[in-house]
Length: 412
Image (cartoon, rainbow, N blue to C red; front, side, top):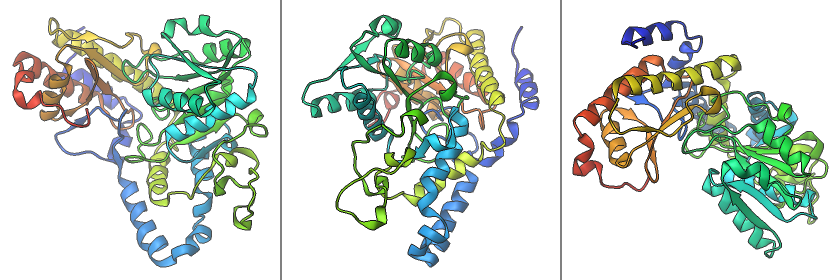
């Protein structure tokens, strides 16, 4: 069946999430397909941050830690994330960056398996997670090592010396989706723990950490959660480990009595021991505004739309751009990918720059991947038609050959 603009309008009319579109600031004439790198601005974030600045900070000053419960923000906002990732409210806290939370969770996992010396990961993991693992092994005096294998070799690499399996659920380049339940079980069967990075999962589709038996997880707040650039991250620690997990960064917010100002550290009970420093209230406020947009969203609908947007994009590229040289890099089946579709092309970078110049914002990942992310709350099916139409024009006119599109910017 030939897909037409009318087909896309009919899909939008039947979309139960379509009403969420108006909750975001989306510039006219722009199709934004980069929510997997930076989510769009929620309209209520502007209002809430302004209120915190002018009323809470401006007038109530330091009283706001108690009057407006600033001190409770990491746990309160963590509980809102918990619903999206299949965790208990008491298992998630918002703190620090994803990288720091990887470090904390890895250290905790290694301490829980002191007789084992290997961190296992795959070559599709996000590099910063691997860097943090490398840094941790050096700090431990080279007594541990990071082992990196292709995704298809993970199960066979789970040997008796593996302490923790550390994976990003969705490959940031291709969108390939790991089977969290199966790989977590495989790790547990070998006596290892699991650590999942949900940076490209949380807010894009429902995750079931408890159902899968995951031990630790981390994720960022600025992609599909729409918390703003550099928004605080989150960390999940399964309830069964919270009494024994050792957090390596002894900060005052993780102390059992931070305002007793004891000279010796003792950790708080529960997930709160994974806190470190003072909560960043302006960025936490923006993140909470983004999370509140999920409050009445049925998570199954989120996943169905995520898959349908990707399916439509793939079908339209095949319909409209046959012979263009674009090669699908993502799994074809929606169940096997996250909320993104990627294509390979030798001229991937300038093609993406030419497309952005036409008002369709995706991004590029070296060496040759054009990446398109579909945030279900604000991307429409009509957006997909418009994006592919502009991509067709770029390819037909070979616009990517223009010199201005070939100059590499600092951020790609």
